[in-house]
Image (cartoon, rainbow, N blue to C red; front, side):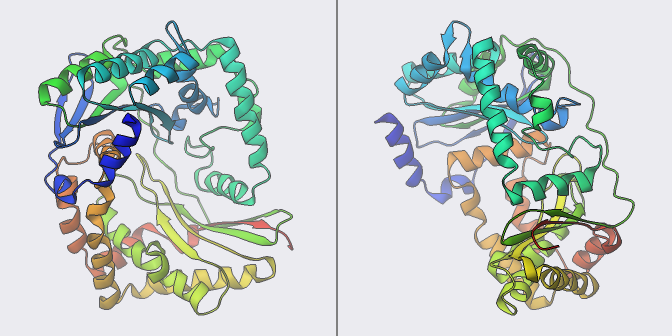
Length: 432
């Protein structure tokens, strides 16, 4: 019932709670950064520990970050995987973990009643600081991962994404898929995961996010407790800069499917990019605004060449991908690609209209409060703000930053940052 109570309470949250969210920030005695938001009214709290330990830290062992993360709760200290799951479930707590290119994280959501909170946090601390990496657990998780990687080879969309990232990033750490590839994962040992954990899961490389109905004093105690048994260690070297492709390229992968997946793009924007808001608002008009974007209008509405067409900037620590994408019937691939590129080039040349800009701003700012109207969503944002060291008033100033974007700023940013002569094109389908 406690788990259901949390879910129900989240649905009843008022947006006004979040409009006044104040992010506080400090460092633990070990040097870990802490980001805290008090959200009074619900007896629950989200605690997330984030490390600079995403797939970009795999080096040549593609997939080691993801497999390390997946194995943390399969056994820790004297607890088995079943023990860990039972301890969390007995107090209505939820545990989760994951990785992206830049970061790895593990999190717990729990009620704040002292007995429940203490048990959940103690279990979470054990998972974080004493993972066992037992051989049997490792072999089982490795086999599951390998099965998933082999199944991925049957998905044209997955194959397109992998080839696209490789085309954009070459030998950069962003080039390989987060979960790795069969050839590397097959060669892993449990010791490889232990070594990765020991190097990156250290206090100097950790950040803690706490969002919920706890006081500043309780938040400080919580952060100190969950990190107390980690060695201080050191931060890793910065992820290397991204090198832009030297020229445009076009790659086709033959696949027995009725639809062809089309991806076009290049390295785009990063979290501290001064052009970020101009690119973000401009992209909303080009292809990020779903059914009101130019790509959707030209590709689907006017010509019926695809169910949808979109574009996205995915900012990361370094330049994440800018991608335009669609799926179309194999025999329409060239026509659909031609329309996509013509639409993009026209946008690049003329920019948006005043009407499009006004509509985009209204669309973005009108739904902004809904992006962080639950503890979970707010925790996601605070983790992003903390990890990428954005201003603490990022949420407060987001809408004014959007409103300040002009047509000329969009045109200027796109022309400087998204060069047609460097676009990488990947198609996966049949009929070439």
